[in-house]
Length: 493
Image 1 (cartoon, helix red, strand yellow):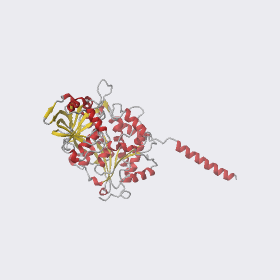
Image 2 (cartoon, rainbow, N blue to C red):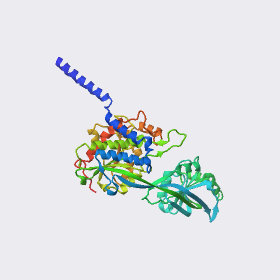
Image 3 (cartoon, helix red, strand yellow):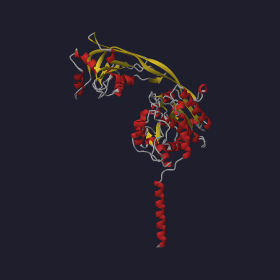
Image 4 (cartoon, rainbow, N blue to C red):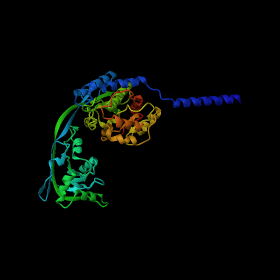
């Protein structure tokens, strides 16, 4: 009897010990966190000026990263002897230059003051002449058939809401232009302030001819008065359950031009050679760019340093490279890509897919790293892109081996289109973003509300690197899994 009691007591002690271990906080890798902080402190310093593409801040950023990667033992990954390490990317920044709108009815010109209208284009110049108008209501419902839209200007009521998504859908559906009547609280001055910022595109992209036009509700009301109609009448018609788009007895001519500035910038590409490169490659991505100066005096701090977004991601990318350089050589090449122009529309990632250093079909997996210094150690992993690729099973296997929990939620996918992985997915590259930052959405959203894209995103006391360090370790294991051609065969195309 005594012997049994001793055994039971031993079992209880073991159980209590296990519970104590489970309840204790995870052990932090202080050395790795210090290394990450050192990178972030340099890259997010005022001396780097907010890492704006085409500036001295870019030169310092790329020089720092290239030096780190070379010392780690990476090779140039551009596959271009003329541009080792630094792959050129040419951007075009456009700002609105001129704008005009003219309305006619049965050949008679209808007066609209110049300060009551605004016409914008993303291209060099766009023009529509004497196009008939199709009233499409408030923007709800399906886009009319292309045959009904072709050659027409789509007229939409905004009701005080920015309908940019609807406008884009109408343009994609065949409208020659979209004319928005500002019939709510939104003013022409507010639209102008938002839309007259620089717009960016790759220089290789065609200069689009899309046209977005805006007119005040009062000015459009005067146009409709002579037709026995009113903006209020259009609003009532649009609210009807049986509303269908219909022509309005108007023709409109619209024209807009822009001024262009060329920006020379670069992606940084390194490579860790595999012993069987013919079996494909694993791609790791983090954007290095940010906004430069983003506030004006009398603000005390005017630089958007981008400590979390995305000096932290580039720091993790660099430390992944360091650790992978120390493991036995893998089957596949590992490509390290630090992109430019992510903040301007994922442009560096697009440039990479337009001129890749290897066939895109050779990339078996791509992992983006962005805005990782958010959550503490022990936070589950969130997957941006979960359910959208063939990578989920392998990611789950690595998570089990590393004893990491994956958040079973679609919430991280709200960020799918807002990160470089989206540009890769458009070219059928299986790309996801796996991070503890998306494992606690409350903390992530608090950062978004307080510091995101603001001068306050800088190195300061309390910068959380526990999760970022664990993400670094997880990605090392993740890359080793997907770089093993036996575990992950190259898909047949």
